[in-house]
Length: 410
Ligand SMILES: [Zn+2]
Image (cartoon, rainbow, N blue to C red):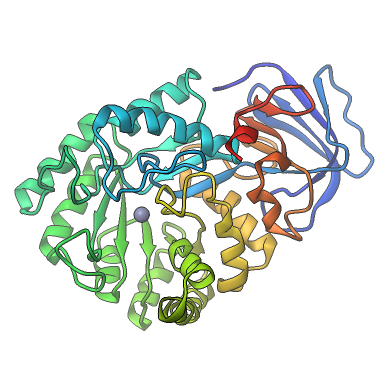
């Protein structure tokens, strides 16, 4: 996916990912990385392919911080069941989902769990080799078989099974072990607010994963589960609807290591689209969620958007709606939401420099028609992504006459 050669973006307003105001400038990309960023009227002279931005916004590519790329629903594919189809179809759907995400401005994705084994890691390799188009991936373990899945087999429960699961995932090439520390209504035996694993089982699994050089993520709502995660080196904490002072102290101690993904898309959709009591419940839940997230942010913890797209009603491709939800329901400014999606998402990807328009960073860039620092909603419309660049390679550029599939997804 790495490009050789040079590209010069001229006549652009740069949002560099830090959350500061846009500035007029030029950006030179060389051999897959950002080489130079000039400000104001300083013109860069380079023997390079030129893309005249026409005053559009140049910003870092977005990072889907909670991707379920194996979930079947995409903007151009409706799949009505909770369970996925058989492995072959899921594999093909997943390849397409990767293209949909890249076409919508997601140059990287951090998986929050697979629903079929083996697919994500193979896909990651194909994308890295440049044979399939999609976001750069950090891949996760199997997290759950949904009820009704024709391929379902029991997920690990005993200590021995959990350790074996970590080792098998490592052999498969997985980057992240994802665990449910609390339950999930209608999917797991344990409901939303019930704990799933004993302290001993979590500690054992976490130790094994860490020894194997893997990261840990969890689905967790109750504060007891959050503390399990924080005491055992979990890096990414999803959902997190409840905190207390002790949990906040633990978070603050590890604030440079951890990320919190509230994953509010489902609740926000119900607050906006549902009727009656369902809608009122969702609204109340969002108000409480904001209080929790305010307390977490006040401790300096990185809170990241996106997640749980791929369901009916929330297909892959609608992910950028989360930016608006962060602004409307969690009190982020548009620039803060964008910084969370780029700078912090890039830090979450790790292993290299992603998510900023600064020299030395991997050249994952979006040229956007409009000002997302004023209205994050422009990023929901893929036709406003004039250029999508990944590691210096142009995936789509209206100016260069190259198109992804985004326009046909609409
Ligand atoms: Zn999820």
